[in-house]
Amino acid sequence: MALSYKTRRRLSLLVLLVGLPAYIGLAWYVVSLFERPSLWVELGVYVALGVVWALPLKAIFKGVGQADPDALPDDGSRRDGSRRDGS
Image (cartoon, rainbow, N blue to C red):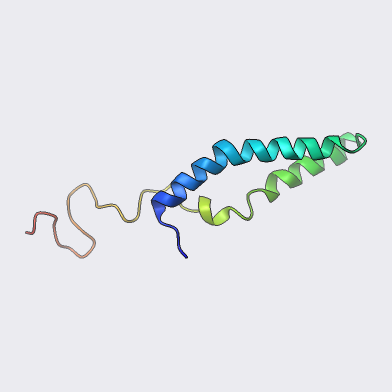
C-alpha cells in the first residue's frame, strides 16, 4: 500500500517529534544497563543505534522534503495540459 505525500509528511513529523526522542531514551536506558564500556565501544554502539532507527522508516522519509508531486502548479495548468478554468 503506497502512502500519499500528505500521509508521509505527517508520519515523518510524528516519528521525529515523538518516536525519535522515545528511541533515544530507550537506547540510553539499554546502554546504561551494562557496565560502562570503553569510550570507542560506547561511541560505536550509539552510532550504530543512530543509523538503525532510520532504516525501517526510509520509505516514510523518502521525498518528504520535495514539493508535493500531486499538487497543481501555480500557473493553474494540470499535468495533462488542461487548465483548471476549463480553457
